[in-house]
Amino acid sequence: MDDEEADLREQIFHNNVREQIIFLLLFILLYLFSFMVIEKFRQRDSEDCLTADEDEVKVYRISLWLCTFALAVSLGSALLLPVSIVSNEVLLLYPNSYYVKWLNSSLIQGLWNHVFLFSNLSMFVFLPFAYLFSESSGFPGCRGLRGRVYETFIVLALLGVAMLGLAYVISAWLKGDRSSIDALLNLWTYLPFLYSCVSFVGVLMLLVFTPLGFVRLFGVVGGVLVKPQFLRDLNEEYYMYSFEEDTIKRRINNAVSTGVGYITPEPMYPDRGDISFPVDADTSLLKDVSDSVLQGKETPLLRLRNGALQAGLTDRLARVVTLRKEVESQRKTSSLQRNVVYPLAMLLLLALTTITVLMVLQNILELLIGIKALPLSTRQFSLGIASLSKLGWAGATLEAGLILYLSAASLTGLSAPIRAARLLPRARRTPLARIIALCALLLMHSTAQPLLVKILGITNFDLLGEFGRIEWLGSFKLVVVYNATFAATVTLCLVSKFTASVRRELYNRFKWIMDVFVIEDKTPVNVSLIGGRASVEKILNGEKTEHKDKIEQHLKSE
View 1: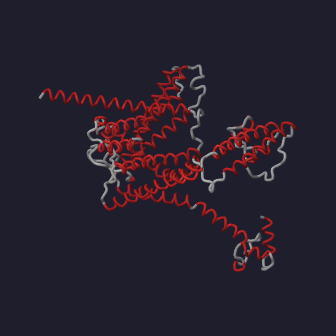
View 2 (view 1 turned 60 degrees about the vertical axis):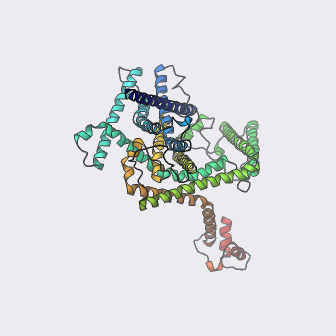
View 3 (view 1 turned 120 degrees about the horizontal axis):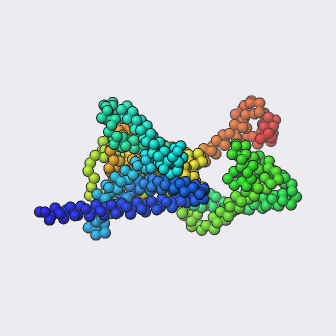
């Protein structure tokens, strides 16, 4: 009996060691990938390698390591559900295989628990510490690295007290029976509550940006792949850029040889086209032009003189040459890729979006009827017992693909406001403060992704650990309203996307008819006498003389 207990304890110990080794290997892989991503985008300036202050270098590197840790945790959180679904199907397909014995329920459960713990630490401790540490300067009389550490810990402690107080107020407002001193002193309960609040904000953020991402993905894929000939004439674009390149070269040579400080020949339409647009501050070679742009005084290229004009033309020439080379490389694309791959990619995106909307509608009906339970998890988890989909491994693979597709769509939609705020990371030009902000945003997005998938009913896999104990997941009204809003928003976005050209053409035709019908003195033309462009031509040819002079005068002014 003692030998059996010893063997059981030994087996538990070895299983625990194996799981910890697997967790460590997975974390190392995610950390290395995150480190390579941050190394590609971080700014190479005096804060890192070129400064002579060793303390500044240490502060910068420690903050960068914490950002890398947070990014690795966000990647792990985004992969939780797909990995769990695939693991369940693998155990069903190969239940007695020697190579998958290490894959069990304890491993997946521990993975969810580790991701939840590290997500909380990264969100509420590591990323705030990284930002405060990078901005600290130390106390008077205690400078250097030690002073900056003291200042960071004190400010972080004050921030933590403020956050815990806010969490206590919100919790007491939501639950009137938890306003006692015991609830105030039970600090450990506030960390899941704070995470619940952050995840709720993240889910609302995904509700806004995921439908927009579905629409923007069509444009992103269309920009990567080469469109067919009937949708995009590459030969016309190539000749257009070639002619513009030759024109700009002649103007540069003329400005250099003659010293004339203005463009000659003058463009036919000086108020149209890129050449009258403001000079880009990122590519301008002159400090005075860049300073004027930064101060809000944008100088069009036609108004520049002498060296500023030559620099502006040179910048414009570089952009045109880049576009011409890009179009020239796209002209060499095979007809098979243009006529087959592009339509298949568009159909695949449309099919995935349609399947997602149909699954959300099915989830709404099942929730209303009572067939399906709320996403709040209360039962014991066991891996490899039954398939998660009625279609078997094929349906589970489709669910994993839809989860990754939702992640890609939400990230694509999230990039729009980031680009509008000019916060998009740029290779080797992204400062540390922006990296910290983007890592926090990605962490909020990735930790809310499993909740979004479960709320929408994309998969039947239960949320494990503390993810399944978030209280607002048990609100029936909230879940149903969220599903209905998501389905309606995605449908409206798709309809708006595919009918945009038709609506634009109808608007242009209607506007043209109104311009013809309404004369400059706001006197309307008799509609019974005019029936479109053909009737206008008849009027101008003399068949209908009423309003002829007014229409001719109006058309000449146009």
